[in-house]
Amino acid sequence: MKKLALRLRDWPPSAWIFFAWLITLSVLPFLIILAMSFAVRSDGGVITWTFTLANYERAFHLVYFRVLIKTIVLSLGATLTCLLIGFPVAYYLARATPAKRQLGLMLLFIPFWTNFILRIYGIVSIFGNHGLLNQALLHLGLRDAPLEILYTRVGVYLGLVYNYLPFLVVPIFSALEKFDLSLREAAMDLGANRWQTFTRVLLPNVREGIAVGSLFVFIPMMGEYVIPDLLGGAKEVFLGRVMVEQFFTMQDWPFGSALASILSLGLVIALWVRMRFDQGKTEAASHAFR
Image (cartoon, rainbow, N blue to C red; front, side):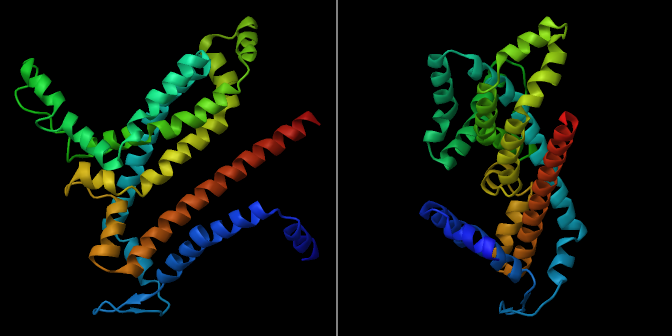
């Protein structure tokens, strides 16, 4: 305890400000939601602070479990697509001249200079039944009827990829920018082909950027509400929409808190497992050099 007290005493003011911000806006709200998930809501809407696991039992009902699985699959698919698109973009920007790099980053974030809702309706104007894509297909005679993209899972998927792609490009770009290109040239001089150089030299050196970028997009996708609501419609129900409806429509805060707690704890456990995995690999590498 004395060592901990001495360490806390040596913290600079900026560290205390960050610690206070973290407790007030992150830890405390999560603890309130976690505590409320064990409460009871009466038929009249009154919340009683009585310990119960009924909300969690209801959360694992087959209906909500299917929604959870659908949300995970869609988020993983959209994250993988962002990675497949974003990695080549980040690689090009990392190797480009400073002028081209600055222009590329500016073009990447130009859509984010507008309102989030306006960007969603921009997707509607392109992929809607009377949007630019369908009008072009009908005009060229390639389709007899409009493509059904909006208000389907495909529409939600496109919206997620479009809105979260830059958040994956930037961490990968930052990692690639620090990558020593001489390692790539040395590997090829030693007889490695392009694929071997990519998988054994490039990827291991930028895996942190890939992991951070993937988490930056996967975690908010899991709780996304606006994109599924506007582009998926009533046909596609995902976890974020279920939680919002429980909080603000059904006024069932204990059950909504149970859903939010399950999602948050699942993501925290996934982060912990990844950190332990990286720590194990680091320890193994350090033992190998001894």
